[in-house]
Length: 312
Image (cartoon, rainbow, N blue to C red; front, top):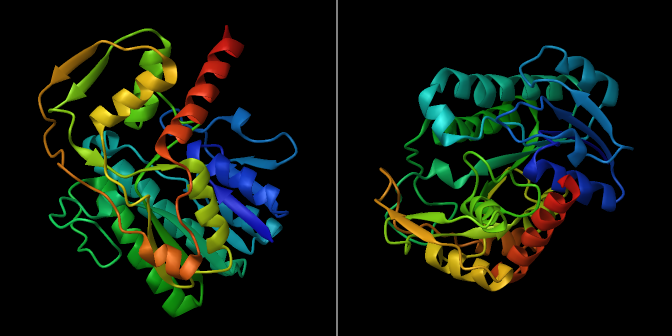
């Protein structure tokens, strides 16, 4: 298949590129390399066609017309909750208007399907656990709002234009290539501190839990969505709640370094527990998370350690 990956130079998107190439598909990557987005040219293999472009650019229609992608894996986004809260217009401009530009170009190019990276942020403060596809969406951040709105636009484009889609709502994705700076996942942030021999900060009491899913498993979910999940939505996670304290202890085991801990108050809006029930993905896509947390953290640690050595 011909697959266009928007945001394909980023953390998750670049792993999709590797997975699609490994499965024998033809891939083009489109990425703006925005400094706050985490996209890096070195994440993309040299033999892959790369287009340096923002998804809001009208030139995207030319790219679609020339490449004629059968599938679009849409991973370009303004993904920072903090930036989106400070600048909701920017958030909506990228995540909604930019997405509409992609969808309109896809329709004109007769693209068959869009695989969309959604988020657990669309649920907001959901009281009942575990979360599944039927859980009510009540996002509390502009980022979560725009992700939810885009899901509705996908339904509209399927109904009115015949553009198929699969929505994947991710838990907390971690793994190699995640940016340990700024607003990243706690595993990448902690690893950056551990490798620098520095201390870490744990908010609240550290017993708050999330569903941490390895990026390689996320890539496999996208492979399954190439041919499955027509017009459907899936939560993609392990189904296992893991606390920040458990993350810390696992990193001590992986690195052999007991980083000093500073405790801080609970962050406003921080939920106590969020984890998924991914039974639908198993039932309909044949997908389940296969990477145990400790194994995934070892792979992530090895990547960051080797990268730091290469820089030195």
